[in-house]
Image 1 (spheres, helix red, strand yellow):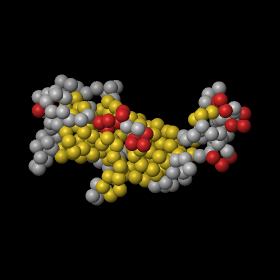
Image 2 (cartoon, helix red, strand yellow):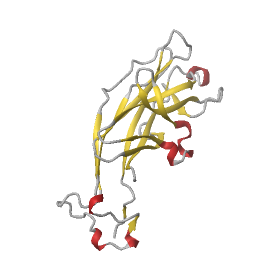
Image 3 (cartoon, one colour):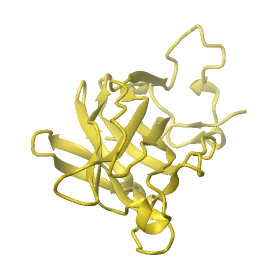
Image 4 (cartoon, one colour):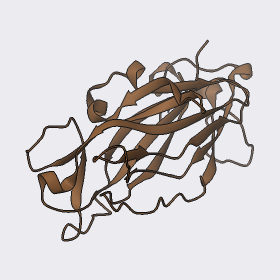
Amino acid sequence: MRKYKLKYLTLILALCIVSNSFDIFADTPNNQGNSSTILDGEIGEWDPSINDKPDFSDFNDADLEGSKPTEGQYFTISATVPISMEFMVLPSSYSKLGSFFSPTYKIKNNGSKTLVVKLASFNEDTSKPIDEEKHAKLFIEKVKNYDERTQMELKLGTLDDTYWYDFSKEVDLTKINSLNDEEKILCELSMNQEKNIKFNSEKWERPENEVLKKSAMSNFTATFEFAIKEP
């Protein structure tokens, strides 16, 4: 018999993160219009048409992870999320390194229960390799000059003020694999609440200084987890 984790329900979303090539003649931003989709998830007896819905009346403790829900504890998760995100470095008359740019994206809680939004992972998307004859590979890690790796110290943050770009919480993507669960939480969303998120970076390298190429890029996959906040 399959097990159901009932302590909280988690939805996992994988995003494609694209970094456009960047150099002094950086590409035009390829913002895809903040495309988004709606994720839905459920727990308990939510739909009579589902044949394999759990029958909690016939479960024993060995078949469950967490506490058995009561009649009033069958909840639905619904969240609107971006399906792709991007960041890039644009030419700047103020800095030889260029100017970091990221569009602003939105995550919205469409349900009635408070959601906890966590960035579970951020990794290179090896299924979409770059053309390394044309571009240097971009590494999201701490910058170490003259090590023949083009690096960027990247964060993903939640914005409270989109005018002043005031981040209420940022997750450091250079050390995402060593962060604990609390450090990976981006935000909490109450009923019908939405939050703005975007990438941020204050330190990166120019590829011509590291690998003698004019541009650097990579594709990444981010995994988000959405869970109902426990009382």
